[in-house]
Each structure stands twice: as C-alpha cells, then as structure tokens.
Length: 373
Image (cartoon, rainbow, N blue to C red; front, side):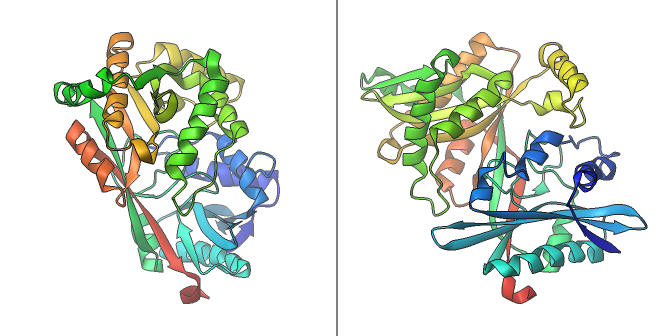
C-alpha cells in the first residue's frame, strides 16, 4: 500500500478518473466535470488559495488507485479553518484510515484544532457533506457517495456536527392556493415589487445580489463578503443553464430585499458526458440541452435581508417563481430546493408547509486534531 501526493498532470488525471472506475456499475452516479475539479485545486482559478493551501493524495494498492483524498485550510480573522474532502475509497476501513491519517497529519502543521469533512475548498453550496440518505439523482456539484462511506467516517472517529436536508417539490404537491392567499397582502403593498432576472441588466442584478447576500449572511461566523467580480463571473458561467423567469428578486422601497435563484438541473444533461466537456462533450451538451427531456430545476440560493424577513416576501418569491414557470415552461414539473441545515428550523417549516418532501440528507462531520495527533 502506497500513499502518493498529487504532484503532476498524470497524478491529477488519476485523481479525477478514479471515481469513474469506482462508480462504473452504479447507475445513479453522475461524473462531476473534470474541469470543475481541476479548478478547485488551481491557484489561478480558486481565490481560496489567497487564504490558505490544499494538497491531494492517491492511495495505491497493486499498482492501482484504491482511494483518494484532499486536505485544505484557510486563515480567516486569525482563525485557521481546516477540512478534507473529495474522498473516494473502496470499501476497506484500513484504506480509508490511511487516507484520513495522511490528510490530518499534513493539517497538523497549520495549528488548527479540528477538521471538517467532507467539505469543499470553497463555497458551501458545492461538494459539501456526506450523503447518508437518498442515494439517487445527484445534482450538479453535489456530493454523491456509496452508503458504506458513513461507516468509514464514523469508525475513524468523525462526529456529525450538522445535517443538511435537500427537498423537492412538484407542481402536484405545491400548495399554491394557500400560499397565494398568504402572499396577496405583499403583492398589494406598493412598497414591494418583484422582478425576474434579465441578462441584459447583469450588472444591476449582480449589484442587487451582493447587497442582499452581504446583508443576509453577514452574521454567520463563516461569512465571506461577496464581490462584484465573483458574482458577475458566476452569473456568466451559469448562462448556459439559466432561465431568467426562474430567478426572482424582491425590492422594498426600491431597495433590494431578497432573491430566489434557480437554474436547470444540469446533471440531467451531464449524465451523458462522463465529466468530459471537450468539443465532443459540448456537442452532447447542446443536443441534450434542447432535445432531452429535462423536467427539473434546482434552487441554488434563497435569501432575504434580516429587516424584511417573516413579512411574506419569501412566500412571494416562491409564488412568482411558480407562476412564471407554469406559464412559460410547463415541462418543468419538479424543483429541487437548496439544502438547509438543521440549524435553520424556520426554513424547514416553510418547506414543509409548501408541500416539499425530503429527498436527500448529507452530514457534515468534525474531528479533533488532538485525538488523532
């Protein structure tokens, strides 16, 4: 058994291709885009390298990869935050322990006290958490893994810190009449107005998004302010899977107050590409984007600034989204709602009241460095 750090293009190729071999007989697994994974570990593409560092390793047995892992840390406000992710392994506790030991041993030099896993070296809406229920239909940039991974983590000593719930709602289960009535007073109030996204006004909506995001999330301990460069780049990258009528903003006294952002469930397309968006992959993408049956959108972010929360603006955003999609895109009958943690009971209550059903559960774990050093 040999542990090998990823140091060159051949190692990176093995790091990216290993899951394709591991899951080749799993009909539910959808390969992440190769370039997406490469970008996470590229200092030129990932701004988190300005705050920290990342390393990757492969575990080799009989000249073949049997596992992989990445470890990373970042410094924020004199606090070291460390994590590991992109873990893949055959069903062997000894192999998993070797990978965990290697990652944690490297992280000890940072001075961190604990390690989160499995997480992303980046935003929490991507590659975050271990799937423990709902082993089907992974969404774009959402972690998917075999059920036995939970035992590999917990046998090593990882302890769950929070639970992420992903829910889905359909045109058949959404309680439209009830929530339209709740929204009527908001729609009648002249200080509130709703507007869907328009690519021709990208700079305006990018600025509005930043205003809402930075106010809505600033109290979170892990808050990192959004920048105009970051959001404009993100919106440009989402353009191929963007539906303007699926992205809504609400304004209060002409001030940006909330947003609800949905995009195509692009994994219904990417399942035909096997992670490779080369020129052949782009042709396949274009074909399936317009000729395959895509019936689901995915919510990626939902927020209202604190002073306007619990006034009905959230419900109004959902109603506007529902009406626009039903009128203009009746082929979309399902919407996956952005994941929410067990620390957010208000959103759980809202989703349940809407008629949403839980479809996936991910766990985020932590482990103390001291217990493994």
